[in-house]
Image (cartoon, rainbow, N blue to C red):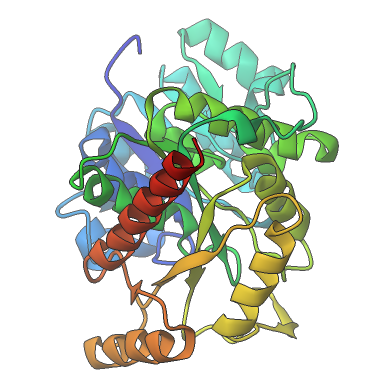
Length: 357
């Protein structure tokens, strides 16, 4: 990087636990990179007040106030359906670029391709970083993940925005503590922001989704015993199931972790699609994986942010009873039950391979 990142996170009217996914992940996993959040609806509060984490990161109501915190870059902090750039933010983005702020965006709208934005950036020396810009040299998948030695773990979900990336990031340190070299393969714009590399597979031409996933997994495995692949979408989501299946077939996981939110009963923004039970979801995912490589679900990660402590513990116990698997909320509680399951699965896999040689 040419200069340290100090983000002004733009989340105007949307800063909240479920409405500002990119902002929230950056604040949770890279808080030192965040100078200020811009949202007039939450102005005067802190990240801790709004999200329950992030400490004293201030929330302000105007661009002028935000600039008083000396940011070096503006980060688009939301990930709206379809990933389109909110037109009402155009004037604000031009002000940021003219002020010399780099712009980081995970939207499907590629801001660097906008002539006016590009002109402003060139004049001020700012850089526009489109995290969802796909590489130009992607190919289809050829099943090459079968040739790597690392154990591949994929998070899958009952819905979108359910905790698939967060679960893998929470697991990193816990799995490392058990003596393994671990890599995180980022497959979405927010994961790329945090990890510093990756491919947003939902921005890839459909034929190349599995190929992009294959490339990411192989690259991550170059110096790792265990690869934690960030999941996307849900196989029961009417809009995003194609991304989910492409990711499964490209990454070819050895095992999966199912992510779910106990309080959510229908697929987000699609109330006509009920979410199946955990047991049914496990059956669906394992059946889909089996023709290319059997991949059992070895644990369940619950997102209980909207439940009380008692309700959260009860949800964990119900999921354990239903599935017979290790279950936890890896953010609210410790990720250790899932890390222990991955450790055991990895060691059993190595033992099985050794017995065949």
